[in-house]
Length: 367
Ligand code: GN1
Ligand code: MG
Image (cartoon, rainbow, N blue to C red):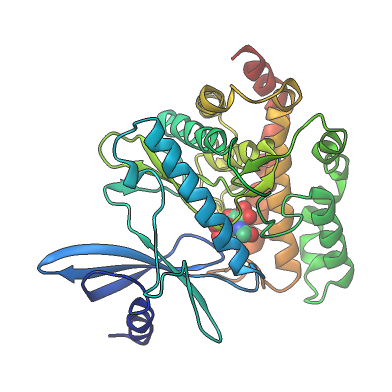
């Protein structure tokens, strides 16, 4: 076994797993945590588990992450049971406890947790059909609506100011000023694009401060690849990547869905001619989302739906550009200039949304 697998074998012994480990693969999706899919032999039957190492540079308080995760998954499961939905163990993540009954295992350097692997599903890095966009919208809207009545204290903010676009803008400005890697001169066009958009960064923050847009429990990382779709029916089964589930604004979730479901391309597409907000995808996405979240959204939230797509796409683009200027320390990259490519793709999408924003909002107003 490779080094990493040997390490994984040691880690897996900490959890209440059934079977002998056969092999493990790295899951390539995700820019932050390390994720492995491990296959075990249990008396001749193969069973799979997901082992995940939390990135503690990003999640400074992993106990808080796990505390939120346990509360959220317990509640989701109970709600699904109350609704008498079938196939519940494929619709909600299940944490496998450690042998001493904890939700995670930690040693001096690392912090691990294990999930039951959801079988018979797949995830996609980009959307293939409008039906998939509908499923994504429905799944995240349903996720938000199931969490409306989560009992107990306010969830921990696992990353404070995660979607505070003003603070993100300030961090970006500092990165430009510092220019530690001497990259600013090569990306002047992208820097100017970001600076020219300062006018949009406070809109949702102000609506929140005025209590027009309420705080809700939100997912905060609603990328299309965080929805697992059934292999046969294509139905959205399970929403994953729950580390940033925390108090937030419903619009941030919708915005990130627009970013990741309406363009036919990958997030790091280099051919910018291919990057565009496609109206048919948006329509289905909005229909799916409003079919589930429509019951609790207020009129102010509804009025900012199209805008949120532009804002969150801009925000993530700015974060990629900031990381490029700062030497690629936050998002994992797979080639030089990768964060710059990602930033360019997001900004192209922002420009495409801008051209269609009015039509997008008109559509939402009619749904
Ligand atoms: C990161 O690791 P992943 O892909 O789930 C990031 C998101 C970004 C996303 C961009 C904790 O998510 O905020 O939108 O990359 N997660 C964190 O692809 O920063
Ligand atoms: Mg994530």
